[in-house]
Amino acid sequence: MSESIYIDGKFYSEDNAKISVFDHGYLYGDGVFEGIRFYSSRIFRFDEHMTRLYDSAKAIWLTIPMDINEFKEVIKETVRKSGFTDGYLRVVVSRGRGDLGLDPRKCKVPTIVIIPAKLKLYPQEAYDNGMSIITVPTRRSPNEVLNPRIKSLNYLNNILAKIEAFNVGYDEAIMLNQDGFVAECTADNIFFIKNKVVYTPITSHGALKGITRDFVCELTEKYGYKMEEVAVTRYDIYTADEVFITGTACEVMPIVTVDGRSIGCCGKVGEITKLLIKGFVELVNTEGELV
Ligand code: PMP
Image (cartoon, rainbow, N blue to C red; front, side, top):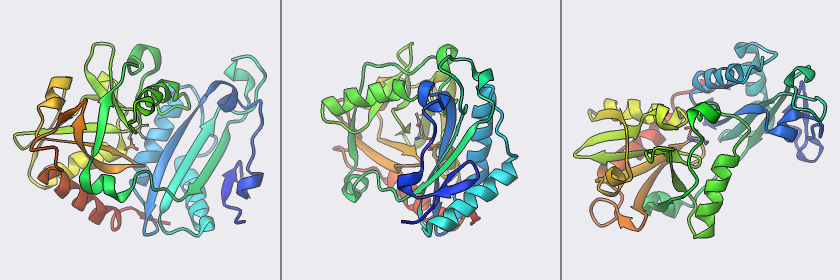
């Protein structure tokens, strides 16, 4: 079995890749992470992912014991070791090994893990015909509790929402914020299109500032459509012409029904969504830093 999982300076096989049970990432979800894609041996939006990782770390008072360039080299080496030309990387920096108390000061060295993998989150059929989603009761953590812009190892808020979706037969769901505005989905950002203008919720309403979200915003403007970050209600989503979601794992996924309402014209994948998916696929294979 190939030894391509990086843990603190060494590479391990899947069976031997292990960390301490005293790691606060395990005990408390105390840490940060990134999910990064590479296509045709090019790491997609590498600098943007690394900047977000270092910002998330800073926000939780965690110093990553490597500078960004050094870290990028280790990630590239991991991709090379995997032998994959297309794949997904999970980059995790946890608080490290401490005692059973919460005190992060007792964790002297953060643990760094990089896992390369193959990923196909949804079947092709979903991309061709669109997915159905619902709104779930669990609200997105308010900024004052745990700012959703921190990509932390605390995903229980999203997992609870995901369970609510799974329990009624859906794979993805809209999460509202405390005030009832649409924040995002459990692991994806959401967009809607009305009268040829593309809208997405403002991040201060409880969304992660998705790297795919930012990329799609650029793409939208490149194709000459107007793009706006706004306060979004479920009414806006139900009455939209098109809806889609974005994320590193799902990429750009059309949404054709929301809470039982068909979106746009008879719940078919919209034309602007199709254009954005095509542009996305074309560009990810050519832009990005070579490994
Ligand atoms: N929102 C949440 C809660 C996420 O976990 C993710 C990433 N899976 C996203 C949005 C999408 O962000 P990105 O495009 O950077 O993957």
